Length: 165
Image 1: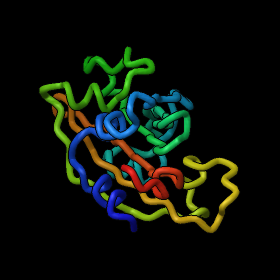
Image 2: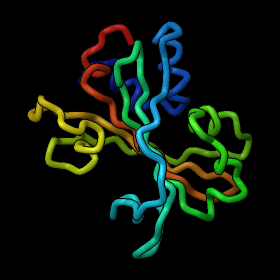
Image 3: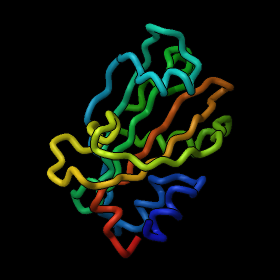
Image 4: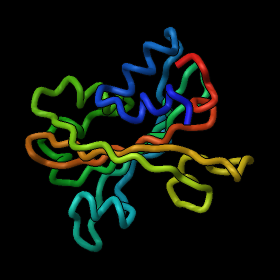
C-alpha cells in the first residue's frame, strides 16, 4: 500500500480539506445519487437499524482536476437527518459540515480492502475495466447531537496511483 494512502486512511481530519489542499484549486464534488434507500446489511448493522429500515443515502465522487479520486457514501438515518441541518446540504460537502459542526464526533475508523466481487467496489467503480484491482476504503460512524450517520470513503485507482498526495 502506498504511504500516502495509508496516511489518508488513518487520518481523523477532513478528507475534503486534505484533497482541497492537494488539488491546487481543482477539487470538486459530483453528486451521483441522493435518495431514501435500505442500507446495505453491514451498514444497517453498524448503525443499529432494524430490518426494513430506510435511510438517506448520498453518493458522491470527490474529484481532482475532474478525475474521480474518492467515492463517498453517506448513510443518514431519518432520526439523524431531521433537526440536524442536514436536510438542506445539497451539493455541499458533508465533510465540511461535519468538521464545522461543534457537536459532531467521529467514532473509530475501520479500514478494509475491497475486491471487484464486493457490492461496495461495484458502486465505487461501475463498469471498471480493471477488474483485478484492489481498492482501499474506510468508514466511520459520526454522531451529531448523539445521533449516528455512517460515512464510507473508497479511494479509487487514480488516487492510489498518484504520488503527489
